[in-house]
Image (cartoon, rainbow, N blue to C red; front, side, top):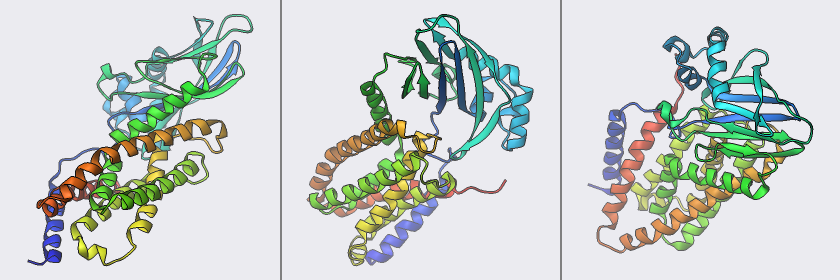
Length: 374
């Protein structure tokens, strides 16, 4: 059987395998969630705007399935109104503002709203916190939203943007470090938090790791790895910064399937081998193009919903630096191993064994991420 026919048979097998895969969430990042808080004010008056994933909020507040399974925005708003007291009780027990170590008193201001972030609906809740004390005090913000103990999600991160006590910045609150103290949170701490956030996203974002692995499998030498990785880095850095700053906006319904398609394209090229090489200099422009799409995916993961947020530039750059550093570590570990494998008699079969599962999983992601009408 010729290499072309053999590769075609493998692709058909991948399609069958993908069809047999069990149902799973539409994206590779759904095992956890990110809460978002915008905290502003001075002295005794503080305003907090929270963005919380709608269905998770309703589950955590121990409401009925008719509330958390609702997909229509109009009905979601109605459920938030009906269950206002339960929602307030849950949120105010797990998100707190203090002034000079004295707890501030929260009150929900206005009605809840619902907005889309990527493919998920988020409840938007506004609270006014009344604090006691004189001028010159310092605020602290704490979050214990959606803890592991509730078992619905794990490793929740609360991204806080703040303009308090004359200071502006952003922070990431996690279970191990749940409190932000204004005046004690410096620029380097902010950079470190978002650097780790970027690193975590690449490590736990299996689709991006598979794309990088597919690139490494098809690379012929160190020079090609450096050029390809540089093109991918430059491309996703451009779109990540533009999208995160609100300059470019592409719906997640488009971005996520195309990311899956990019993995399929590179892995299939690896299976085609010499046939793909005949296309000449296809690899670099294709990698750069798909890198632009992956950058939009990175921005969606950070999920900053604010146009022109130049005060967040350090956070964005740190997040991207975390992605780049982790990407370099993956390349440094995997490429030498692949280079050694390429010198053995099993090199051809190793490419197939590694590429087939990548194609199968990515095919499943592609079809699963395509939004279907209800």
